[in-house]
Image (cartoon, rainbow, N blue to C red; front, top):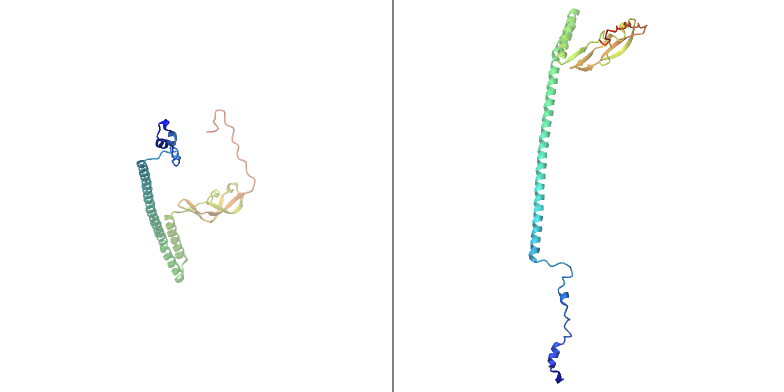
Length: 231
C-alpha cells in the first residue's frame, strides 16, 4: 500500500530470480577440485618434462657408452684369440718340422750300417770267408751299438744279479742246488734296454729257485752291556 513507503519496482528487484541458481556459501565456493590435487602451473609442468627428457638422454648415452665399451672388449678378445691361434699353429708347425728333422737325422745314421750290410752280403756271395764275414758282422754291430748309444740307449745288465721285477721278466724258473743261487738271474733270454733313463724293454730271464733245506742264519752273540746294539 501507499503507507508502506516502498516502491513496488524496488521490491521486485530484491526478490530472487526463479531462473538464477542459488548462490553457494563461501566455504563451498573455496573448496579444491574434486581430484584432491592443486593444479600445477604450466612452468612447473614444462620444467618436469625437461628434467625427464634430460634423464632419458642421459640413460641413452650411458647405454651407448656401454655398448661401445662392450664392442671394444669383444674386438680385443677376437684379436687375442686370432693371435693365440696363429701362435699355436706356428709352434705346432715348428715342432713337426723339428721332429721330422730329428727323425731324418736318426734314420740317416743307419744308412752307413745298411751299406756295410750290403757289402757283407756281396762278399759272402762272391767269396765266402768265415773269418772275414765274422769280422764284418762284429764291425757292423759295434757301429750300430755306437749309434744307439749316442741316442741314449743303454743295456740292462742282469746276469748273475738278484732278480729285479722293475726291469726284468721271469720267463722261466729253474731249480738250483746252491742256496746262494736262489732268486738269481741264471741266464738272459732277451736283453733289456733303457732309453734315456726310462725302461724301453724289460729283460726276459731265467731265475734260480732253491728248494732244498735252507741253512739257519748264524745267531750272533748278545751284545755286552757296554755295547750299543744300534751302532
